[in-house]
Amino acid sequence: MVDGADADGWSQVAQGWAELWGSFADPARRAIIEAAAIGPGTRVLDAGCGSGEFLDLLAERGAVAVGADPAPAMVALAREASAGTGADVVLADIENLPFADAAFDVATAVNALQFAEDTTAAVRELARVVRPGGIVAVSNWAEAALNDIDVVEAAIAEARDDEPYPDGPLRPAGGIEAALAAGGVQVVDSRVVDVPWFAPDEVTLVRGILLGEDADVVTSLHAVIVAAAAPFRDGRGGYVLRNSFRWAIARV
Ligand SMILES: C[S@@+](CC[C@H](N)C(=O)[O-])C[C@H]1O[C@@H](n2cnc3c(N)ncnc32)[C@H](O)[C@@H]1O
Image (cartoon, rainbow, N blue to C red; front, side):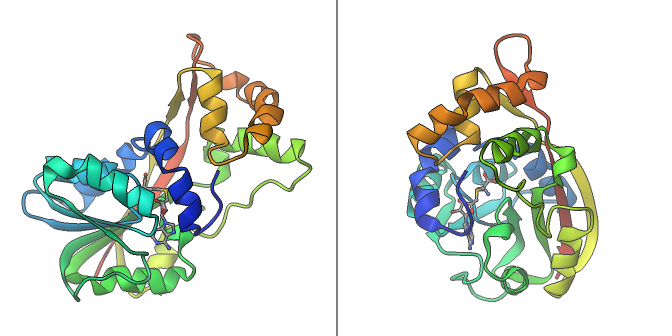
């Protein structure tokens, strides 16, 4: 998987991301749409929009959606995917948004805030572009204990003689809320939502989990991943990994 705030790395995996992971966060996106009361005419910025799937969901609700992402290939895919919806997509990172103060009613970051170099500065920037009384919404992976994928990641780490990947401050209960509060916005709701990930076969399973890794790494870890994911077989040759995202919304 791509590591950190590496726009080139994200560009290299953009196509694979869109294909294998693009819609996976939809339950979190839908929860944010409901919690933030997004509807016809709501002006929404999705920062770290990736391949643009949230922009489509927003457009379906009649919102005026804008995407921002620092990876050029992600921006290209998001523009392609949302071409029919009128959504604008710009090349920008979350800490430096090229928008006027109070330009949006809602700003979101789904599975993206963790890549900001300075989380507090990023939240402040999201809040800057939202009108007073508007909403900043953030969603991220929940802690490892709630995710089947982390069982597989732990097996990979063991096979590589690495320490398991640490959870990071946004993942545990209260992590997103603390980041929002540090950025000066007032948390009004937060929940956990199931975000299952489906792989139709073991090749897709391995490809999805090792997105961005070299072919030799994929080959060498194939058996490790298939063995670790055995409890998650769906009985039809595929795998369902039950994972969770946390989300929180805050008022500006
Ligand atoms: C895990 S993907 C998630 C994409 C999308 N939000 C989704 O839920 O499918 C992370 C995205 O964050 C973007 N990203 C990386 N660093 C960023 C930053 N500093 N600001 C905004 N986005 C960033 C990447 O280019 C990538 O598109």
